[in-house]
Length: 384
Image 1 (cartoon, rainbow, N blue to C red):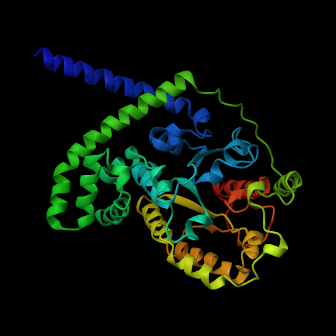
Image 2 (image 1 turned 60 degrees about the vertical axis):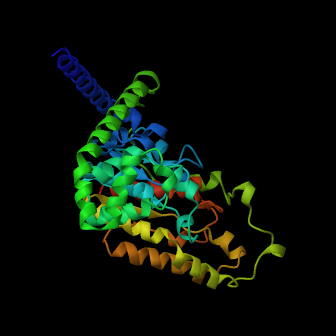
Image 3 (image 1 turned 120 degrees about the vertical axis):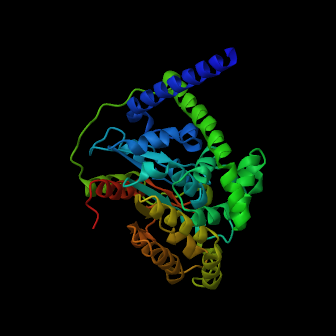
């Protein structure tokens, strides 16, 4: 009897604590949304509260969300809601479509009918296989567990995602239940599907524990680390002027550690075109991008796909012509078109030296301003 009372009391305290945390998260969303936080990337509660907010546009991506100009970067540019919304970035260096799939699949119904943006890096599709440390450094057990044991995705889609996740076994060594569940899903056999259903309640319990930990970590951050929300500063933005001003700040900017080779070391144009096209076609990330698009369709989100252009000047010097690079853009358009999602690939900036920093596909000030213009149009329903 005493043990039952103690258990009931502990459960009540945790339930009350979770309710307090949720209240604080929602009341602090204006401060939390624009921040780039490990807690946000690895957990779900801050992503969820940002997605629930009517005046927040989540954007998922990779290192381009964290590097480059601070002032023009979307999360900072929209921090004071100049046009009525904030941008909430989720991602860090090495985040790839398979990582984003798990986050979105975990959020599930929270994203139903929700506008969000996804930034796609050409680096993902110019290598036959990405480095495993990219995925391993971004793996979120909380997101993976919630996606697998949640109800947002159909069984067949989960099976395809599970098969890819099992190709990165080092991420699962500390999570035997998750690994076991992924193996059951990936097999496709009826008996394994039954076993998965049998362990489903245990997976939900594991997810509940992770959820509590996530909420209490968020509450601790809010209590001790959060910055005051900036005052709103509504403006009428002159986008051509803003883009021109950003261009003045970094004309022809390049990453000093990766400068374009001098003429004497350049490869003749077109010499490596065949190599480039073969590598693009062989990239495994096309499979993961399709899983991402399928997931977005399954959860009924309203996404905008933003594809950073290839740095044409840099690739010209590597012997890869504009016509070969066009193969990448067309392949991207063809895939996204199947799902009828809006895509802005900025192909007309392929040879624009002021848009990206070679060779890592990081946006310059001017590049970010173009991104911001599109994000603003998308949020306010002005996309054509």
